[in-house]
Length: 325
Ligand code: MLT
Image 1: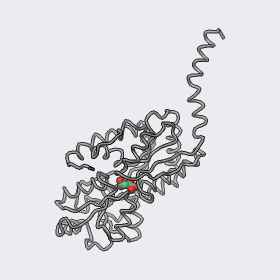
Image 2 (image 1 turned 45 degrees about the vertical axis):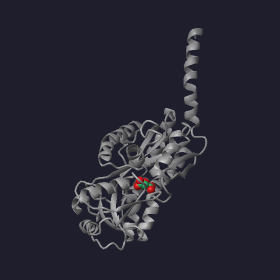
Image 3 (image 1 turned 30 degrees about the horizontal axis):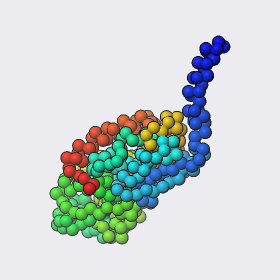
Image 4 (image 1 turned 180 degrees about the vertical axis):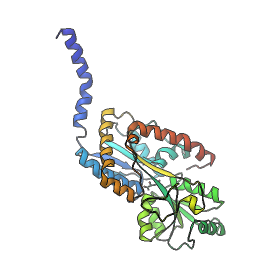
């Protein structure tokens, strides 16, 4: 090889060397997956299923860290400011990575301060009530709320969260009024609903389905066009008398902005291996989660989906004058 060609080859090799070595050695220690809500809630449950599977693929523990508060914005800031090395990730959803950007002034950008890793799942909400609520179906629930204006309470995962936003849409559609009670996540809110401390919730099916099956909460409707395969007895909002209140509550994983592409590739592959596992798919189905098709599991597809959701929901949420402050 001529000297000039040798130098050229050596420079080229040096340029790719760090990424190659990193790709071969990443991850060399445990990874932290930040969950923006309380343990035991829907995001936490999905995170733990995923983390357990990713551990097997990556050969490193994926630790769950619940960082609660401000409807997920405390966790969002922490994840956005973490070292962009792939060792700190966050799981989030329609609330944290779309709504939060519209309902409050954040110190980070929900779209541009993260590298997308992968879309994880998509599930609707259930409109649920405490066991002793007299209403037997959604029409009766609306009637009861109208007969008791501003007396009922609805638990949420914080001001401006998906549960709050869905509740405001419900109030606007039905002409009802009730108070919102914020919690550090849907898990503790559901505990209070079962105990009769609050009356209703617009809750992710993933959170409340086990209790609906156990008969400890009442389910009035699912916020989707079709019934859930895993809970076919629950009517859709269209069937139950509130047409069009569709809420699709998708979850995804992100890394801090500027996490190297090869690291994102490794993490994305580990999520995809989990989503392709029939055991994970069955568990997700039981929890009312739809697994995205493979072409929607790429980082680029997540970025596109999130941007489209922001474009769709920010004007709606702003027009409804929903603020977290
Ligand atoms: C949670 O895990 O508590 C939820 O994802 C909160 C929510 O419904 O936004």
